[in-house]
Length: 450
Image 1 (tube, rainbow, N blue to C red):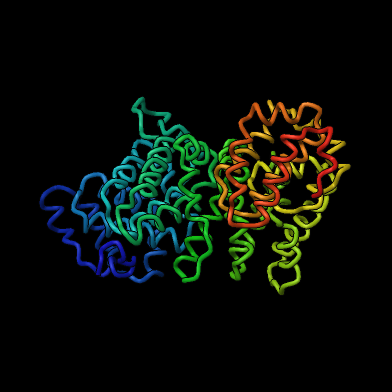
Image 2: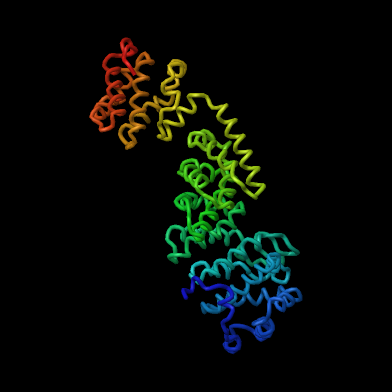
């Protein structure tokens, strides 16, 4: 079996030569006695030993990770820690016991990141990192320095930053073809609860590494990866700098596509909660309206969900989207439609009052909307978008006093003329209308048939 796929239980079946390690002075006689007492015992027996003398066993585990480099042994000890913390996460407090004040408990774990030792190892590190958050406990300062010693230890902050760097590297170039990305995302889904991890992850440009993983899934393994990826995005949706990154990516359309197609309740729940968080942030609300999220949410509300948090979030998102639609002016909605490149025959395009009332708005940001419409003529392969863009340019020419001059200066004429030979009749018709108005100007343009 691939070592990266070994379970904790399989690793713990190994026979580790502790006596040999004592003979070579890699462990002490006291360590050997504790290991003999703890090794190959039932879970209840180990629990009793940890209750009686937990800090002593933690000290043994840390010293082995620090002093022994044989991978099978390191894997074994990390599996013991994984088992210990999985059974009772509160045992992580043992790493902060005052008897360990002069021990650097973090450095051995930091040294594990680059060794590529099994999936379970990374899970053990993940558990330990999450539950062993810095605390001020009886002489142990949260910066990792003992109050009774001037020795500088590796701090939890150092450890977290090192782990974030390693996780980003795994997302870019996984060390294992099937497990590397899954393990990294699973770790992040736990660690991004920490403010320092969020900050480090954003600074490492990690947000963009999540976006490609947000896509509809079908297999159990891919569904779990999708869920944990969306969980990461949800955690980041509470952090403003991360929201800025999400706003400039394809995160929102991907999240909407996932919630639209997913049937797995936990996936739907975490995406809906994420969308609820983003609704009031920047242009997200207008984009959600443009992507038709309200109709999707109403469809989801009609389904039978058992999770009360999901039902509540759907209701809040439904109300929020309706309120957003009311607040959005017709030009705001039109602008979002153009900027996203999702042009369709929505009512505003053929509403004369819209063009009369909003024609001056097209002058904003050095005629940004016109420039985007012209770019769509160059780049879009969607006949509907091309037809609408030609039509909107013709409307601008008709309703703006300097429409002909502005559109000509922006080099739109050549682009529109190329579309007069388009295979789609809708594109041809509206390209011809635009050219006619461009040549005739506003004075005569109103006589043309639409």
